Image (cartoon, rainbow, N blue to C red; front, side, top):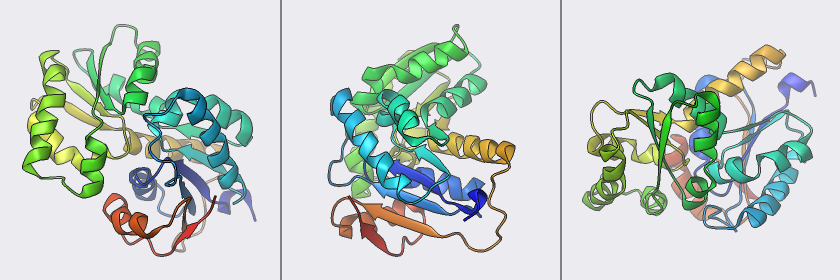
Length: 266
């Protein structure tokens, strides 16, 4: 198989990475994609960096067995603490979600005050803070862990009154810090974009790291001459490490379309 026709590999700790697949399909509608969700061991956000690094290597090996041309690490936690080990193991281009999200934030902010919301692991790692300050040392970064957002998104409570109350609680301190840009640094959070939009000041721009990653992947493949030239419908394959029933049910909301067959692979 020619390099350009080989699939893009995407992995995540579970189901949330399907929002990144959705962004990839938007920006790269001809690309074949292999997705692996480590549903047997989700979540990664509350686990130690050492354990996350071990899991990330195993996830990488799964995708390499499918002869992928590039790996997109959809998981913010892995992107924060294990991107280096994935890059070393893969031997092909690897893209995480943090640098694209940080770049989009620094381009967008006007007052240099950027908020980051994510899992406890992503916020504790300071990965977004470090990336943004490397890009523009003058920017100020304010992080907030929002652990309840993940189960709310998976439960489909995207416009529930309880979700709005929780969002207000989480986001009030960031509003007090007068941010004008907010990075959704978890793949689940795009599903809650409407409720987040309701509770932050109107001047705050939301940055979807998955969307930013989709643009970055398109740019990389285009510059390398590795865009898939086929005009046929892409081949999308979905694999999980646990029984796929719930993944199939919930995944359609994250992907925005039917998943079709979901297979178990470990």
